[in-house]
Image (cartoon, rainbow, N blue to C red):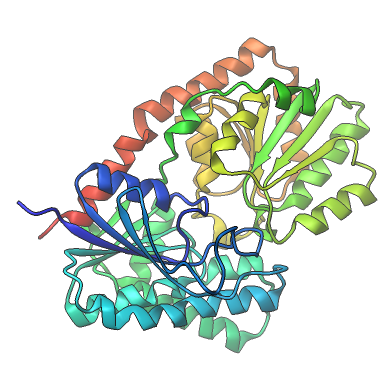
Amino acid sequence: MSKPKVLVVGQHFWPEGFRINDICDYFVEQGVDVEVLCGLPNYPRGEFYPGYSFGGPYREDHNGIKVFRAPEIPRGDNSNLRIFLNYVSFPLTSLFHLPRLMFGKYDKIFLYQLSPVMMTITGILLSKVRRIESTMYVLDLWPENLFSVLDIKNKTFRRLAELISHWHYRQPDKIVVLSEQMRSKIKSITGLPDDKISIVPQACEKLYEVEVHDDELARHLGDGFKLVFTGNISPAQSFDTIIDAAQELKNEGLTNISWVIVGDGMSRAGLEEEVGRRGLGDIFKFEGHHPVGDIPKYTTLADVLVACLVKSDLLEATIPAKVMSYIASGRPLALAMDGEVGRLVMDDAQCGFVGPAGDAAALAGNIRKLYHMTPEERRDLGSRGRAYHFTKLERSIVLDRLTKFILATD
């Protein structure tokens, strides 16, 4: 029996640090023949990774996966103009792969949809022309995600973004979402029957399940109570909430708390400037972008893992991937997010505290609770999270569900 062949279409792939890398590795482990159409790696710094340029390479092999790339304009300084050019360039240049793809013997097409929603257009068109079943994994719900990052007031542009986004969501045969709220939203847009929409949380890589002790990094970060954030630094992450909470705790005299920010993105420069302006430079450490393999070194040293989202009805359906990684890391969580995250962290995993999005006082209060706990109490919270991860969210459990849903035939 021949192996099933899946074409994966999405702008981001290895060596960028997105979960699609692990998903494709899992496909290969399960005997699936995988081909990926993606862009040139430049996220999050906005410049091409070493070894990549407009000259390519446009054809690679990675872990048994055939990788085909289309050119894209890098994000550069992450200005609105450069992000716009990045968003439109890959969808357009990827179309030039269509003639080649028309001759591919694909059994399924998997559309991995982050931002922008248009990144999957080539896979959608191929699916329609060749009548190959397609499944879209909706990770950034558009246009909601777009409006959370860019403050777009023009009603005509907002309506156009909505029409484009909803058109894309109506094209796949099946859709995978992250939460029940997102499922309801997608169902109202597409009209797909219940059996064509599956809820599958994002799986985290197994490396988060293991503590990694790094003495040199421990000396670098110093003593004290460490609050660690990892991931993209963008407007959606509501760093104003983190800064306000840090200011409140410092004003109370809790000066042995340090905030370790591991990541990069369009808001980093402004964040560092604001931290300096408010006299908080002594309690913040900006570690910059690190490959995913380095992140467990930081989570191992964390007393608490923190994250926020902006206050927005549009983001309530989102469960960020970092929350799954945090739970697997075995450390307590302090989050400021609305929606289903609170139920996941406080009721299901019971591994931390979640306050409303944008509420710095609530975030500071939850950090204060964790700060005054004994180390044993904090370890107990972290252990509960990791136990829940192994029971409900472990890689093979989640990715097996995803793979079976994609490959299933009527």
